[in-house]
Length: 104
Figure 1 (cartoon, one colour):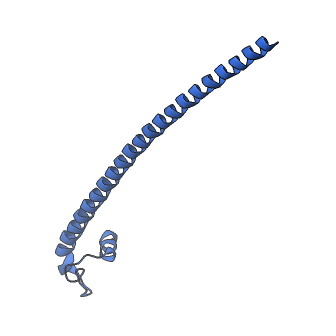
Figure 2: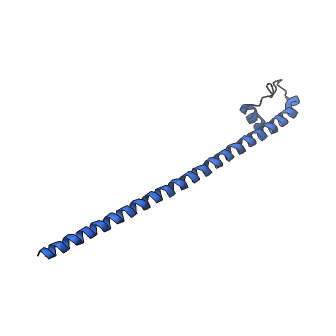
Figure 3: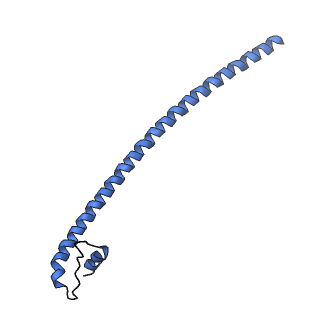
């Protein structure tokens, strides 16, 4: 009976060691996976920030282009103003002037 009990204890100790080794391996794998995901998220965020900056610059460039076009268009039409009010107010183009130009 003692020999059966001793074998049972030995089997349980081996199981415990196997479970501990498996736990350590899973912990290491989880840490490696966490680091990999962190690196990937950082890369994606950098790509998103670069894209946002690119869009902002493109919008600023387009806004400048629109302002130049409106100034050119209004510069030629300024003489045709029958009501005496000029579109240009100190060389600044406002949003309302752009709306007025589109309605014409």
